[in-house]
Length: 258
Image (cartoon, helix red, strand yellow):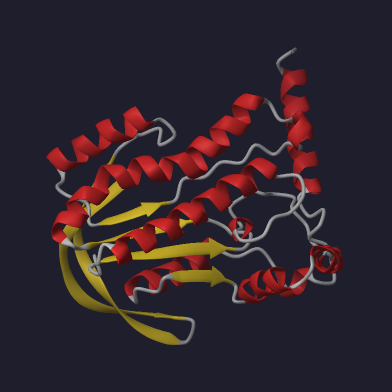
């Protein structure tokens, strides 16, 4: 968990053929170590933040883990960890910081989910379930804020495609399709997410093709969706990733003499 404070001065930054006005800031950075999957840790850390930094007006729920096992090979504790970090943590962090936002009718809650929170694939049942849960939580919370007429509190749902961070190293779609859907650079995802947050956009999918996939999934019969997945190579795209994780685990066990 990291927080920043400071005064801003205008400046410019050129990139991608555009010139954006960005602030030069004298920032104070506060960092805290917190297991967001444990609600007691979240609440204790939130209290420290309030005492040492002040109230939080922008909450970004971005923590995520993946087990990398097929369902029947996945230890129960790893399934529980995935759900706790990827989904349950959103409840604890929001409950910790939302009351002051409601009091001030000011704030922004950002949920960094995944395209796998909108449509699923084989082999990562726990991850997909946790991201679907995060998306459902975010949408219900957004409706609750609207029903309470708290229009000063904004919400943004971020659903990126595969991001090149190494988290899903080995994941492959059909080789003919890969040039059109390469893994996304983290910097690109951050830029798109920040643009959505600063313009109060309720949802951002990257790349835009993900909107089309989500739409097709919602109107096509299941068997048609299966055919689309097979055409894209998305039906078993996680299998190479899972195989790599399994091989790495076996190598570590052999190295440690287990």
